[in-house]
Length: 74
Length: 145
Length: 179
Image (cartoon, rainbow over the protein chains, first blue to last red):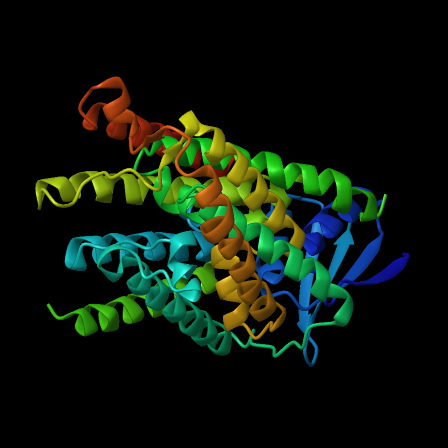
């Protein structure tokens, strides 16, 4: 299971949401990608936008000054 | 079903819109965006209307601060030098956009559409077109393929 | 009511509005980004909800006081040419710096000082139009303050209720539809 970490901290909106969506749409089954986000709005919209994908599991972890959103594709 | 219809974000949008209507009923004012910044260049507007709108928007900053603190999303971020030019250019473009034709900004979507204001429908189309051009020219090629 | 009391109320209402948009995560720069990347559902749902509540509220307020009701927002300048042009300039600006008006205020409240620079950068843009362009243009364009019911000369109710109903149906379908 390949796990990539993509650092989107400091990226100005709407870039984070667009980057996440374009990567998630290209993910292969059993792949896992972690995004480092420090934009509170992206923190809300990413899980909402991806809630429709039945084959994705989303886990959010708060690190010090940012969040790590890990997306696993089954 | 209900959870699908109204998640937390949508409930907050309902409260935002309802509060704006309560403001209209109670003090005969509603939220506006663009013109509210004209006091920054000395224009307080008819009957100080823009000054009032400016105060509302200073309150919006304080309220957003409260929301961020409550949800532990407050994060003091010092601008990175490389982001500053885009911020300045973007800010100048916004300044031009909100004054070249008043009511042309977020106000169009939040107030103009519900008021059935013709200028807001046209402004809204313009905002979409202008945004799409910048997306194509600058953002799209930086997205991971 | 004294003007200072009105300002106080305005500031307090602003705090409430700011709290809700921060908790909602509302920003039209972000929303346009979602639309351009092919995920328009969230921002359309938010805009529909704002429309449903505000259109009903603004329309019904006319029965409470003649001073209220539907009002033109801004001005139709040059039969809409300047509205389209300024919209394009505004749209380009918000996608470039990552925040519409509400987005700029919200991110300032969240501690992102980049948006203090954005806010201060409004000043030269506004000054350019107000002190240089407007005197040059000097109202060489046709100005109208008009809402749709006035344009087609029918009672606003005949537009508000069908459009609010349509927005409710669209909102429900969008909410239940999976991407």
